[in-house]
Image 1 (cartoon, rainbow, N blue to C red):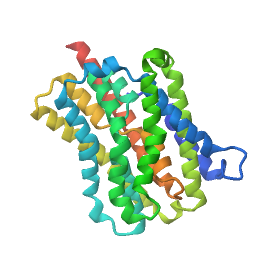
Image 2 (cartoon, rainbow, N blue to C red):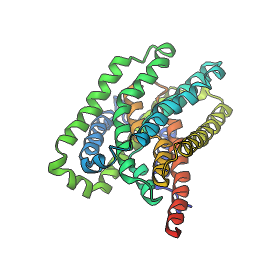
Image 3 (cartoon, rainbow, N blue to C red):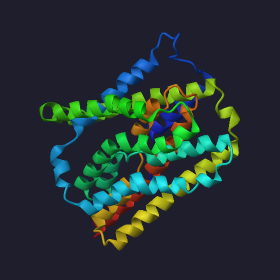
Length: 323
């Protein structure tokens, strides 16, 4: 099991508490330009992401097409379709916004760093994990807003699909491409100082989380949502994780995947990226008072996947040592 509580999760909770008790830091009249800091930070996160991508490792995992198809189909098809099944249960404006937040979580790409780390601990297919996690992040720049556009355009007039895609391309895809173009020159340096870059990523996410929840608390968005609706949302998030994990495991058995590929499919396919979630929420739902609600499910899912997958990865790792 996890030996200690993850400090980042504590930080996320602290940002929500700060936004509740001291909202408004970084507003237009504030001396602290949080919007500007987070905007620049978003582009830097993905510039460093491009720098850290290893072309050699990507090439190693390129040929395993069955694994890639399963992971990407799970991430961008199975996840959203499961949440769409809950759509008929939406009857009120309260449940509509919560369902959209759940759907946003389901439409997000897989996480990169934690997927690779967990696959490594479990003795899975590491090149396959690097390839799928990296490709997932790039595909999500287009696929996630397309999925959201199917429902947001009919639910709110604040969402413009074309503007959102263009904004994501400028703030995310362009920095990634720039990072990739400089990879062969300073990529090794970026990977060497990866821990510091991860710390930078987390700091920007904490700023985005505070800013998002601050807007929601100032607009009293959460006042209109009953506690038991939030509890139901948490139960659904846990159920979605279990269901996706079970579906991927069954498919792996049916396709007779090796143990290494099975581990990679399970860990990459069941993950959702808090980095992409925070960044995309800041871009897709910018100006919306409900922005904090859209981040809430992915924060809960992040904590769940971190604890659960860490435990499972350690068990796989111990089993591999005993073989």
